[in-house]
Image (cartoon, rainbow, N blue to C red; front, side, top):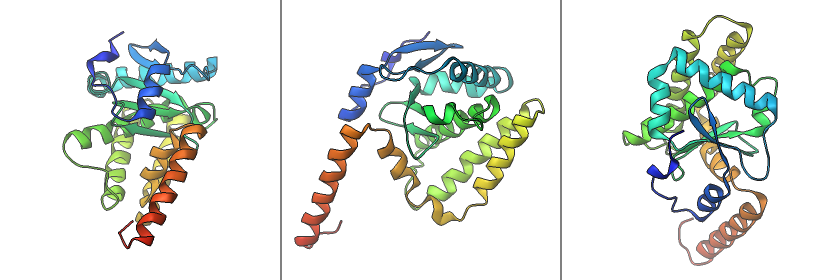
Length: 214
């Protein structure tokens, strides 16, 4: 398994704590941080392993990018998102509740990983996932998911994953207006989210009272 120390340390305190608490395991050559507080079930491990096998077999270039551009995959609680790309960690985050759900088949998980990897590639090209661009960047990432799925063998799980992508691409652009903000904040556990929320509320009150923009 490659070392995760080739990437710079996170600048964010919460990310540094998450990285320090991580317990890394090898999943088909990809480092996966299973977390010290919630060990994934055997079923979740098997689905993620199969998803990575699908990427390695049918999209080897994407698999190589995953190894080169990321520390690996963090399994954690995201609460409001199935997955997220965390630039400060150089890692793809996968929600453990999503991994344990019926809709998280191996093809669906593989497509989700590619979605987040595409976010990483766009950021490397200088295309930030800003509020104004979010709808467009999400569409690009959904197209990358679709391309991967079209390479996989036909199966009911693959069909359901394709239908799910069509449903998401049909959403109004306004849906994505604050999706990225919720995904970033959702990574933190409650004891970090709560102080952040309180601090944010106090900061907004301060700016309001002093006439500064929020």
